[in-house]
Image 1 (cartoon, helix red, strand yellow):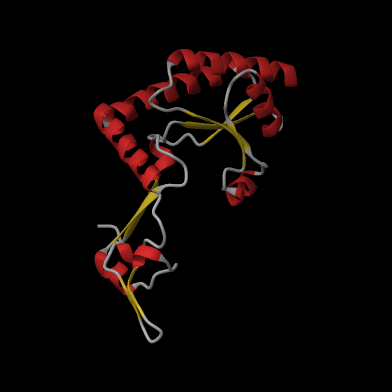
Image 2 (tube, one colour):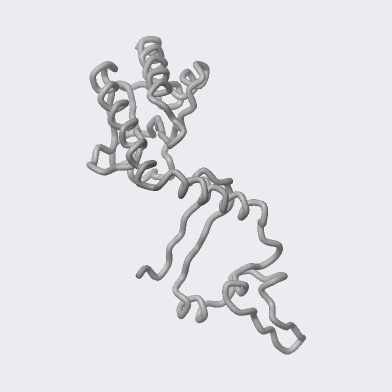
Length: 192
């Protein structure tokens, strides 16, 4: 029963730059278009413009039909596995890696430990800079994100500049978690 609901394709194994915005029909009908062009026009004259019916009213220009088709395939892929199965697998990887990190990496600081959180670990090791850790992990073949992750006010409240973030997905394995942990241990020793 949400008024609006948005999601990005790249958060569900689809392409970047594509997403979905759902809006309640009665709200969308009242809203003016925010862009002009192509398919969103029913008729145009010097005196008046009439907009197309929903959803075309908000579809200015040529849609990213290739990205939309790829998103469709991503949704099919997720449905073929099942959302519950994906969540269970990601949770297993999260729990395994978090446990090992806290047991094996001296000085580890994990940010965000709420029950039921998604399969992301944001962390720092001691006072080492997140960017240094990320660059060294990258050199060892481990892809992580570093920085403030579009949450600068939170980082300020935590008294840090940013974190290293490891994310897990349906295609990741326990063996990859082990490789990440080995590389993290090595990088942590190098920076001490």
